[in-house]
Length: 201
Image (cartoon, rainbow, N blue to C red):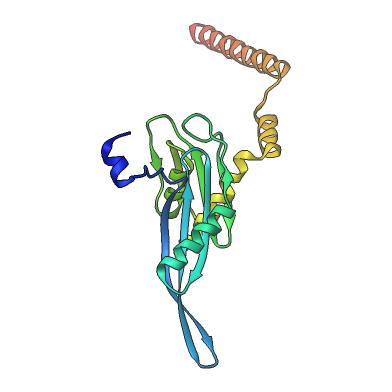
């Protein structure tokens, strides 16, 4: 141990478990018998950039209280996001309230094509290349929750199996497609030869 650390008793500060990003901070009022009571509402996104992400919303008497409560709420609602290398596996459209979010896979190096709440959620989930679009309401809370619901689908085995069944083509069908294409090209060649012969006559 160093002399300085022995004398002053310094401690190494460990890195926080989750990164956090404040999406929205609003002053809200509640009407009571004696008048109106004001408080703050915080919307927070937390994630470890390794597949875990959550959104929390909470109210507090002051800003710091609202943020700490929102952090606790987001921690309760953490989800695991299944990624495919640097991007997502397939296209998803999800609706939450009036908000509607589209998420599509992207090629390596494309980056995150998103804005506002969607970007915050996707970045903290650890997805590096993705194309997204907010199609409905611009309400940050609803957009963030719609993004979370969309990301949940990548960890749903039933949805993945349905997509595989939809995309999977049997060898027999592939052979049939090949024979049909050959017949079509053969017919086209015969018709061209017939037209040439007619023209020569």
